[in-house]
Length: 159
Length: 54
Image (cartoon, chains in turn blue, red):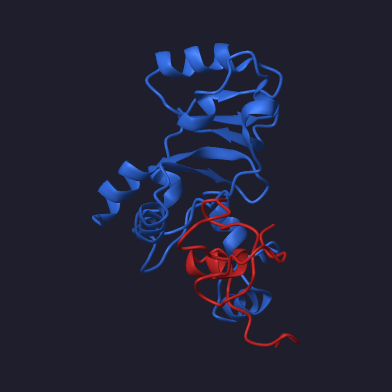
């Protein structure tokens, strides 16, 4: 919370009050719990699939493609050792030459979204942009999961 | 990001010239949106009313 809110809570008698310097959006982006009127609404972070396959930059596309499709997926997220998102393989990238290294085949630096984003809003964008999926990450770029358009639309009730 | 001048792609909300859509990363998106407008639309950041803060 803001320093002013923290001081106000102290003035109201709360004793265990902290100023989270990075701000409320950063707190929510880390998937930490919130309270209030909107706390119960579905968010991108909870709808995103946490079991999305991942791979590294130096793997061969053919091997990754086999592994990913065996798991029933048509997408994979390229991450480093800290699970920071470096790239994305959607169906189009997965269909490229199997001898390519992942770093040659991937879509580099894909747009990512924070876990607190309203599922209704992001579903609308996914439909409007005809995008099959989007990665959800924390503020420091670590993978939370892959949000599939069908899941977002199902949860939001939009078409 | 997507805020550099491009070959005619413009943000559908504010009209800023962009290289590619900040949502789908496509350079020929029909519903292109710039990084700033997207973040405000998704609530990832607050719209800044004043350059000097407050």
